[in-house]
Image 1: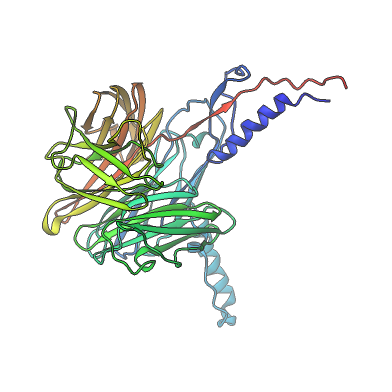
Image 2: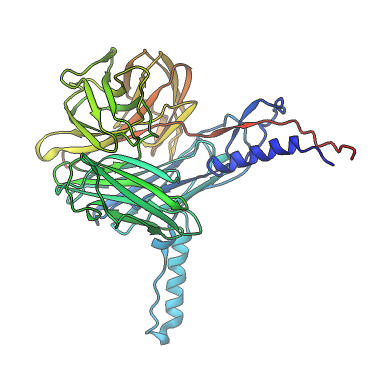
Length: 516
């Protein structure tokens, strides 16, 4: 009979790869098999991203940018592709059986529509150089993207929508999301001045079933309407959260889970006064969380937190600024009751100096997991604009953000613990340009806000890649600003680890046959 130990280890590696983002794995080129019992990092070979339907306004213009960094930690050299395609539901053609005499013309039109729907909105040609696409109007569909082979490790996509006026005006940015089964969104709202939609996108060939739970300051906002929401295969749906409950609340935490299948989830928040932007999911519940990249000129910052477990959370607030960590006067502590949403108005907490917020347990040894997000407003009067910053994980080995322009980008780098050094690389431009890199040192407990490097001879947009070189963990966020009609519209995207590699147990390739 054959030895089963080596086969079991190999099977375990394959199973792990399947769980972590559809990854298929290659042995690093030129590498050797690791010793049995040790682990190796290998590049993912397949990954998915989902971009929500961009808006409800006929005045909207949406730009898409996809990017994969040059080179991979694992040395994958296989061919592949990376494309963003219209979701099936939004790309379906309509037929009209009343015109039998013109069936040939109808068939031609239907085929033309289908061909257009099947054509990628964005198709990446090579790692290290962004690819772009665009859409306009309220009917723009959600996009479903897949990257394989050498395009998969570190693949990212940015969706940036500009709405110059009217309902939901603003610069709305979102890093297209990885499909999952569990999402937390603090800082949503069912207030009368708000219009918040949960967008769900299903990348798979079978329907997904999702539940949406809402939690306000007094606990769960009961509703049967948010249960068992069907998201058809390859499609996107949106749900206005104020229709799920009769209670209006300024601060609401949205919890999205799936009973079957997986979805990409995001919240599009719009306010009568401050415009609109995307709220992406908070990092997984943790005892200490970091919210990086509060702009220096923020005129209003509101913190919203939620404790999903059975214990209350007592938190100390730390503002990590240019010179170190301080406790904001008058905003030293936050108490979050179990299963209740807590909000705190931090006003102009940064006072002209860019910073990041860190929430830590008030009592050492008692860390209650929480999720959190910031609602950030810049400007005053009728020139106010809003953006959201969720709690986010560290950059890790590497993280990227696409759709940077020659002007208007600010990169915030935060070292909440030990000092750290990172390398920031500006990629080639989508229309041309030479990559450049710069190294930054971030002192312990500080935030460094910089104008990032710009590719030499830039044409089009470019991507920024942040790589940790040494020291403690670094959290990062990119603020993108565009002035429209005298209003400084802005959006903030965080940069968590790109998960371009996965750690798997290595096994000796010993498949010897043993005597019976």
